[in-house]
Image (cartoon, rainbow, N blue to C red; front, side, top):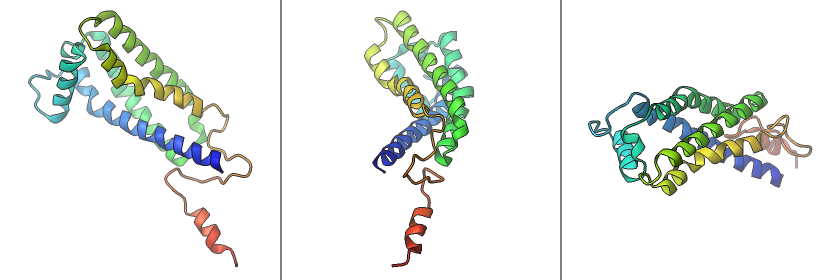
Length: 182
C-alpha cells in the first residue's frame, strides 16, 4: 500500500509537470515560433519572455532558425502530447507506455540539443547557469517518465494493492468500506 501511495504521488508530480509544460508550450512558444518582437508586444507573457531574454538568455531577442525549429516542435508536437499524457495518467491508461517512452526520448534529445547550442553559441552572453536551472525540469521530466513507464503495464495494480480507475479520485474504496456489515 505504501508503494502504491508513492507511485500515486509520483504520478501527481508528473501530471503537474505535464500541465505546466503544456501551458508553456501553448502560451509561450508562439512568441518564438512566429517571431514576435518582444520589445513591441506589451502583454504579460511577452513581458515575461522579454525579462527572461534580457536577464539570462539573449538568444531569444534575435532567435536563430534552429531555436525557432525547436520551439516549433514544442508548440505543435510536444504541447498536444503533454495533453495526451495528462489524459492517460489521470485515467490510468496502459496504452500510453510506448508513446510515452518514445516521447520522452524525443524531448530529452530536444532539450539536450537546446543546451548544447546554448553552450556553443551563447557562452559569454547568456547566464548559462540560469538557463540550465530554468530549463532543467524539461530535461529531467522525460527521464522521470521513462522510469515511470518501465513496467509493461505501468498502471496495473500489484498483488494486494487496490486498482483505482482514476488518478483524481475514485469512490469505489469508500463505497466498499460503507458496504461492509459491522
